[in-house]
Amino acid sequence: MDPSSTHLVLIPSFNTGARVYATVLEARHHWNPVWVVIDGSTDGTAEGLRKMAVDDAGLRVWVRPVNEGKGAAVLFGLGEAEEAGFTHVLTMDADGQHPAGKIPEFMRASQQNRDAMILGSPEFDASAPLIRVRGRKISNWWANLETLHGGIGDSLCGFRVYPAGPLAAIMRRQRWMRRFDFDPEAVVRMSWRGVQAINIGVPVRYFSANEGGVSHFNYLRDNALLSFMHVRLMTGFVLRLPQLVWRKIRKAGDSPKP
Image (cartoon, rainbow, N blue to C red; front, side):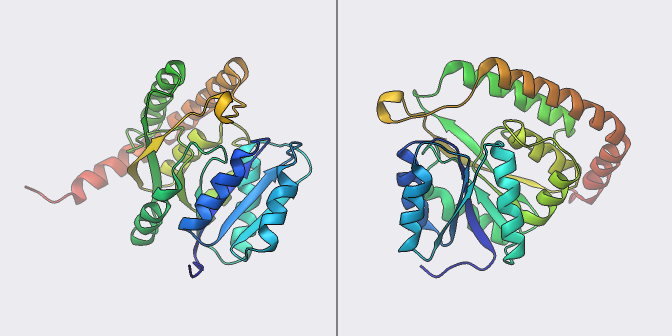
């Protein structure tokens, strides 16, 4: 597969275990290039991925010495991507939840709508914990309130294509969006910037521990982080409300009349 000069797959990983190898291999099967940012992992996968990259010119692996969070790993990758001339990154989880077979579809949508963000809209099966499914409905409600229904189908799904420059600029202006708050805050702030959201359905599977699944989600800690995030975003929403309303009015005026 010929490498893309504009779009790459970016996979942040922290102690994901052996499942990360299958995730990376599947991503490489569907796209070139694929980059992995190891965020301070101590499970030996950094060494294994580095060995994979030796024989694969389409795979690059960065190893960060300390775990700083998913958002921090993505921001590091964005910086490297910009320096190398890439304009867009598709982020996906390292634990195999997201189907690599959807990568080409998302990349095509991004190439056809280069100013937009392409968001995965999760389609859950029976493996999805009910409490997680219900919890994301609350986050989705807040995200759409904070953007005056900016078209965000799902605020938490990590399978997305972002325009790299705008996202990196947003993240560098603040110290948040570095951990579990990255995904929802990214789409809200990108929407505030005027970036259109295009939603595409994506099957999501939660692997059990017996299947090698690993989850670092902590209900108390991460829900507290999300709650604090939405307090901050609501403050920003109030300050931006006139601008958001005016954008809605202009958009409605530009819509074709029946």
